[in-house]
Length: 297
Image 1 (cartoon, helix red, strand yellow):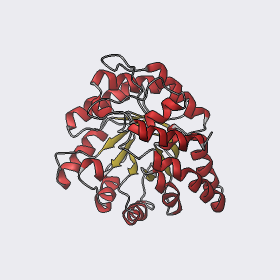
Image 2: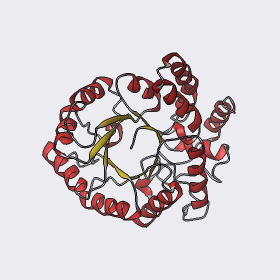
Image 3: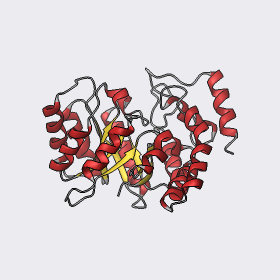
Image 4: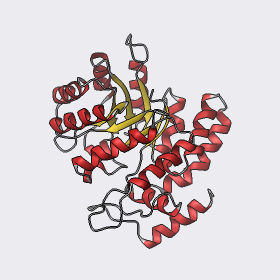
C-alpha cells in the first residue's frame, strides 16, 4: 500500500494575521502531485508543519487530504507526538476521517527507553490503522536502532513500514535483512526519508520514498522510481543526479521553509509563509532557489 513516491505535503497558510489554513492551496498541491503520478499522500508530517497547528487544524488538513485523494491513492496522516495520549487522539481522528494509515514519529524530547518506545507504538497501533514508524534522529534526538524496529515488527502486526531518515544505510540494510523473511500478514517495507538517498535505498531493498522534492517535481521523482523498478538502473541514476540540485536547494534552510517558497514560485500556493518559530526564506536564498527551479521548467 505504501510503496513508491509519497510526497510529504506542505500545509499552505493564508497571509492573514492568524495564518489560517489555505485549503484551496492544499487542494491545488494535492492535484499537482496526483497529476505527477505519485503513489500516495502524507498529510501533517514535519513538512506539513504539524507542530504548529492546533488539533482542529491538524484534523481538518487530514480530512481535506483524504477527501482530495478520493480513493485514487492512499492518504496517510501524520499523527505522532511525544505525548502518547495526544498520538492516540490524533490517530483516532485519522481513522474516523478515513485515512489509510498513519505516520508516527518517534517520541521527541522525552527520550523514552526501549520499553517505553515499544509500549507507545503498541498502544497507538491498537487503534487498528496500518502504522508507519518515522525515525528521524536529527529532529527527535533519539535513534531507533535496527534491533528495536525488528522487535516491533515481530510483535505489532499492523506495523507495515518505516520512514528511515537516519541517513545510516548500514542501519537500513539491517532492518531490511531482519524483516524481509518474517511470516506476517502484511509485508514490512522500508522507505527513504531523505530524497538524496532514495536511489541508494532502493538499491539495497527499499521500496520508495516519503519525499519533500515530490511536492515540486512529482513526475521526475516518479520517473526515477519507475526506471529503477524496470531495472533500468543507468537511466534511474541519470534521473537521480538530475534531481540532486533541486533536492539540495530544498534543504538550504530547515524544511519546509524552502519547499514552501518553491511552491509559491511555481504558483501552487499563494504564499510560502511558515509559522513561527520558523521564518520565511530570505531574499538571497529565494533568488538562488528561483535560479535552480528555472532549470526544471
